[in-house]
Length: 77
Image (tube, rainbow, N blue to C red; front, side, top):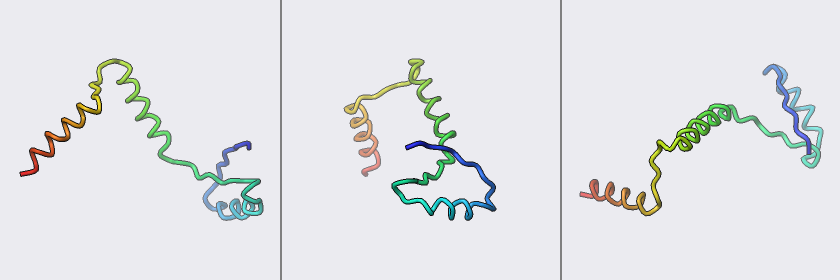
């Protein structure tokens, strides 16, 4: 399948969807755009940059398990 991106004024949204609904799901799939994508992409990129710099503290599964056990035991009483 090929993909294109359409930008249109909100006033014609209904007309565009009506036109596109003439096609079967095998011919056309409408995928709504994720408006948070660019923001999420920037956050992931920033986190990856920090990780690559070597300045981020990483924990093993066992270390996280121990940290969580200690935290839960503090609030257990």
